[in-house]
Each structure stands twice: as C-alpha cells, then as structure tokens.
Image (tube, rainbow, N blue to C red; front, side, top):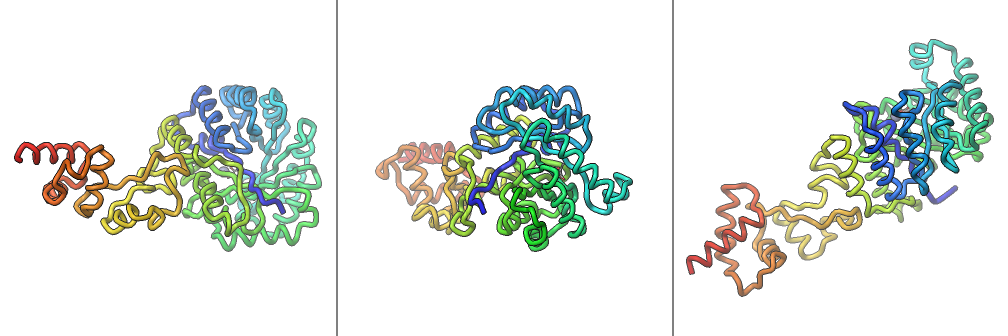
Length: 386
Ligand code: KIV
Ligand code: ZN
C-alpha cells in the first residue's frame, strides 16, 4: 500500500456550491493558483454542466494550472460527462468524476429506481467517461448510509467498468470514526478487484466528525482524502484540508504516510479563500484561526517563552503563520512584558520592569487586552514622571 495520501481539493466545487453568491471566474482562478502552490494533487474545479459560468471557469483553470491535475464533476449521465470532458480537454491530463447515490433512501426516494438500475447507470457512465480519459473517479453518494453488501457490489462493478479511484462519501456526515473506518476495512476485505483502484474518502461535517472520519479511513487504508480549505461546503461543510494535512505531517510517525502539500502555504491559502468567499474563519479554528498560535494564560505564556513546544505541537511558521502571539492580559506575567518590550526594541535599562508591570496590570484590569501601543504609552508616562 502506498505511503502517500493523495489530496483532492473540492473548495471550488463542493465548497463553492454552498456560498451565498457564486465566485467570479477570476476569483476561482486565484484560488486554483493558491491550491497549486500549496501542492494539492487534484483540484476539483467545478461541475461544468451546472452553468455556462461554471463551464468557463473549469476550462480556464484547466488551461492555466500545470502542477495539479484538474477534475470536474458529472452525474452518471452522458450529457454531464460530455460537458466535463469538453471543459477539461484543454489540459494534458485530467480527471472526470462521476457519481450516483447508492443508499436505500437516495435510490428509492431521490432516484426512484431499483438498486440494479442504479448499478447499470453507474457502470454505463464510467465506461462512457473512459472514452475521454483513463482517469475516472466514481463516487457512491451517501455511501455512509449504504448497506455494506450493496456498497461492495457497486465498488466491484465500478472498478470492472474502469474507475481507478473509488470515492466513499459520508455525504450527510452521519457516521462515526469507528464505523467509517470499518466501512473502508470491509471494502478492502470483500471487494476482490480492490487492488486495481485507490480508495478515496469525502466526509461532511454535520456531526463535527468529518476530519476524524477521514483520518480513521486513512488508518484503514484509504489513500485519497477529499476536502476543502477552511472546511467550507454544504451545510456544516466538508473535511478541512488544512487539518488533514497537519494531522498527517505532525503525526507522520504514527501514520507512516505523508502527503505532497507544502504546509507553509496553508495560512496564506486559508486567508485568500476566506476573503474571496466572504466566509470568516472562526478565531479558535484549528491550524488557521487567529488564536491557533496565541497563548493567554500566564502559565502557558511562561512555558512558551521557556520552550515553545511546552504548549505548541507545531510551530506557527510550519503553517505559514508569521509567529506565536502572546496576548497581553491581566493573566500575563512580568516575563511576558519584559519579552515584549525586548521585541519592541527596548533594552532592560530603558525601563523599570516592576513599576511598568504594576501599571500594566492596572490597565489590563480596566481594558482586558493590552496592545503594543499601550505598553509604549505606559513607558512614556513612566519616563515623564521620572
Ligand atoms: O458529498 C458528496 O457525496 C459529494 C459527491 C458528489 C462526491 O459531494
Ligand atoms: Zn460532498
């Protein structure tokens, strides 16, 4: 089994479809360039049959991006596959991603067909897509709620029809990590031709488990993970790729697998996606939130000043955040104030630490957070009085 996890980013497809307003083609191109720089293996650029604007942006991205493979989505019908192929064929190499639902509820209530008919539609679509490219991905929509016998039958048939990546989505974010890992293990144990395909996972965050489920799947042998930057996507969103990347990198020894991403691009990419999509990142968001590398309690601040890894399991620089922040509040010790004054360019002989610290505490009690300009003002007042 490969020791590399392929990353498929679907910010521009599953992420974009959840935004209040569609992104312009130039915004999508900007995001695609950022994803390429981040080292994403496959960029799912859109769903070309859905609108002329989506078709054009997939085509422009396919014409521009050279170091990531571009992929487009299609339902399991020929018209969608034709549109995807026409949008993508400007690229040297591309992927067509086709999907159909496999759970009982979707097959009966949404598709209003039998499972046998759905099986036929899926294999027909995969064979048709193979006329345009060798790289066909097939997704069993709502796999998380699909009876395992049906799921294994569908996976086996899809591989026979020519799909080389089989995606197992937890479309409604219903499963738990143990269950979802178990689904992947079952597929490995029961599908006879599974060695001819890569198993991919695509998890949604309705119960806040999308990242945990994706990681459980990697532990069970999945070698492609799909997600979005900042976890944007339908309803509660998709698995956040910045978290997946940093879990694989920070715990590489535990997993024994890595990915191609250049993690130092994460913060920049996250900021760009947040701004272009008009989707603020919550301040306590793992990896890229404003507080992810800021320390508030006095004990933590003291520890970090002595050795950063007392309270940080990765450095801010490793994800492209300029540096650790120590919030200056009434919980901060004098050590922090001395350190910050040093960073602001003052020598110890420039100020009386005890007196400055007492004034700092009084101000912090009044204001909550004290900023650099407050420290400068306190020092100025102290100098005026001496
Ligand atoms: O969540 C899902 O099932 C999807 C598929 C189209 C892959 O987005
Ligand atoms: Zn999805």
